[in-house]
Length: 427
Image (cartoon, rainbow, N blue to C red; front, side, top):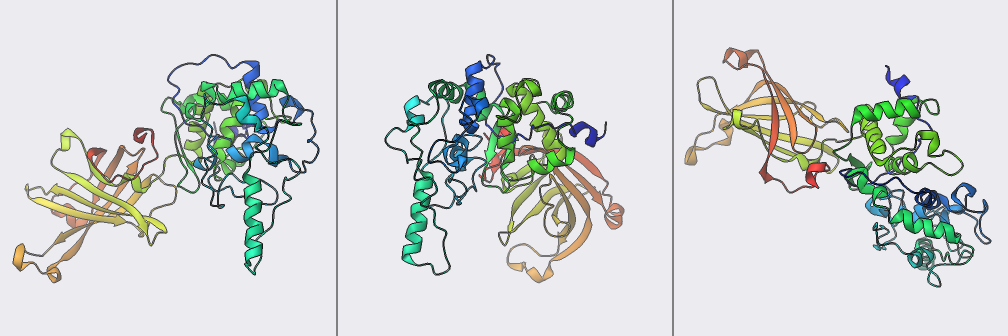
């Protein structure tokens, strides 16, 4: 079945959420209260979420009283999909760019009604966006102070104890935010907010084939395939997807309309969509380390160093310690074909060179060094601990007895760089 047919089905699953956990144990079906709480988390003023359908007096912009607006769809604030969400006159701040390092992350299992209400301690509805002042070109002290004050008010939790959620909504928000099978970790084993766009690693229990089937059975007809893929390619959108695909969206899409998905279904779908759209695991500095072919190829291996050239483009320097067909120790070095790595890729085409010339010790002279083209190769990685290599000697190297090789690679856990790598194995 063509991709367009398979994905055209992506319904108001315009859902883009994130979450971090392992679907190791089956959870009880969510109660009606949990489902209501999930909708209230998105927007408690909506009638479908148990609200009145209108904004409280004094509120001009609904974003300033929505839970997700500051905590993010994944409840991780700037530690998740909202890492780059700064304040504007049309929305509150999730913490980016204001100098306030207070975490907006919500810890599942610790939420109380008082923590949601902020009675007497939160900002009033009347304050809303009224304090917002944009930075002007003069950069005056008064302008900077007014701008900073706007950030401060925008970051303060609203006082929801007056004209806020109903008692039922409040009770269900508490139940939802403490529901273990709704935590971000049930969908994601890692959320790497240091990368732009945010890089999501789906839990290891996810099944892409099952995800494709669920999408085809429940989502066809509402969005084109390309729309869905373009949407998920944006920064932080898997966070929103995870929330909406699991719980629906008030006034837009109900859970029943998309087959009452479980956490497993959502993880399956996201793994499938990552594979189709290329938005999953990608080359990153965390791959730096020593790689080898296992016990069958003990005695040879690759020293790989991934890093940023001038802090911009990701590149690779590789060296390969091996043997020629006479049993002599041989070193090859490699760099990416073209100099830098393909963006958001899992493969690195490289050019290999054989280095000869300089002598040992006091006789060493760098001017004696020569680099002879050896051939080409490709490194491929599926995670920070597994990959493969293909080596293709050129005509001259073939004349010296070298032949084409392809085999799996694994990383030596005792010799790694210490750079974080966004895969399940690193968490």
